[in-house]
Length: 467
Image (cartoon, rainbow, N blue to C red; front, top):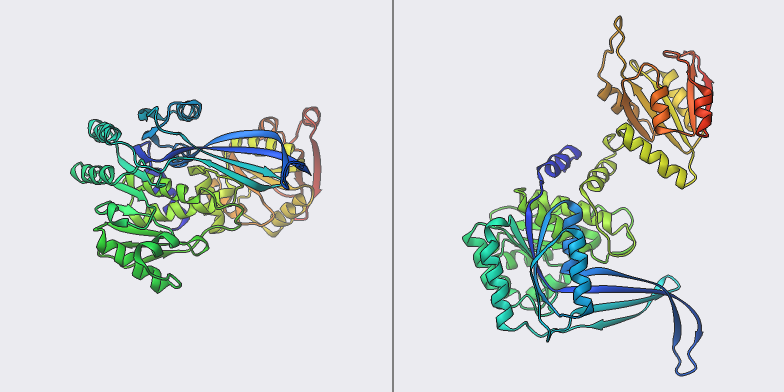
C-alpha cells in the first residue's frame, strides 16, 4: 500500500470493542550477573539485579490492541494466587475489561521465567498446565460471550494449547460469530486444525501450516498449496500464512493469492511478532477494513516490533511514520511545532545538536539549497520552518504544504514544520534549538533577540549566501 492508503486505513480505525479469548500467562524476566560457578554443581550462579513482569500469551495480543487504540475485553480462565492477581492488575492498568476473566482455584496461573545474564538468556523455567479447562468454566466463557456479543466488533482467539481454547469453546464462539456477523480471527496451534473450521481467518506460521497440511513448504508454490488446502478444508473466508523474513501470504475465497513482502529493515527480536500480527489484523478487520488492507497493516506493525528488543508493541503513529520512511515519502518529516519541540528535547537527551532555519522558500533556488546544506553541517539535525506569513503586497505562488514537501525531499533536511509568524522569534522561544541560522543575502531578513536565545543556551549563526 502507498503511504496515502496506509494513512486512509488507519484513519478508518476508531476505537472498536474487541474481545480476546485465549491462554494467559505472566512473563517474568530476571536480569543478573554471572561471576562464578556453583560449588554444589557445575552450573553458573546468577546474581539477580533486576526483575520485570509482562503479559504473555493472549495477554500480549491484548497489550498490542491497547497500544493500537482498541477497547479490549478479555475472556479466559486463570488461577487464584499471586500471579493471577498480577495478571488482573496489569489488565486493569491498561483499561481492559476483565468481566470475562474467571479464577479457578484448582488451576495454576501460567508463568514463564527467563533468567538473563551477559545479555543473553541463561535459563527458562515454565510453570504451566496444559489440561483443558473443566466444562463448567467452558460454559461460563461461552455464556459471557452470548451475553455480550452485540457489543463486540469482533473476536480474536489466541490459542497457545494451554487448555483454555477447547474444541467446544471454538465451536460455540465461531457459531456465535456467524450468527451475529462478527469476525472471528484465530492464531492457531497444534496439529489438528479442524477445530478452527468456520472461522473468518486463521494466521498460522510456516511451521504450523506445514504440520497442519503435512506438506514441506519450501517455495511460494508450496505455501500457496497449503493455504488453499486450509481454506477449503476449514471453510474459512481467508488464510494468512506468516513467513518470517519472506513476509505474508494471504489467500481469500474466490480471489487470487496475495504475497506481502516483509517490511522489517533490521531484525533484533522476533518474540511476540505473531501476537502483533494477530492484533493489527484483527483490529483492521473489526474496523471494517478488507483482509488485504488489514494484512498489509499487520505486516508493517510486525516490521516495527521485530526491530525492537524484547516483546514489544507499536501504535498507529509509528506505523504511519514507518510507511513514510519505507516509501521514501516526505510525509514523515513534516511535523507540528509541538512535535518539533519534543524532537529537540529528545536530541538534547542524546547529545545531538539541532540547527534551525526559517524562510519562506516561495521559489526554491540553488542558493536556498546551498544555504540548507551549509546549515546542516553545523549540527546533527536540521529543522526547517516554512514561513507562511502572507504579506499584503505579496502572496506565495505555491502553498505552504507544497513548499514543505519540496524542502522535505532534500537529504540534508531532517524535519520541516509550517508557521505563520513574520518573525520566528516566538517559534524559537518555543522549540529552543541549539543553533539558529540566518541566511544573509537571500529571502527576507529579520531581527532576532540574541540574548533571549542565549538565555536557554542557544546561539545564532549567520550564513552569507550569494543569490
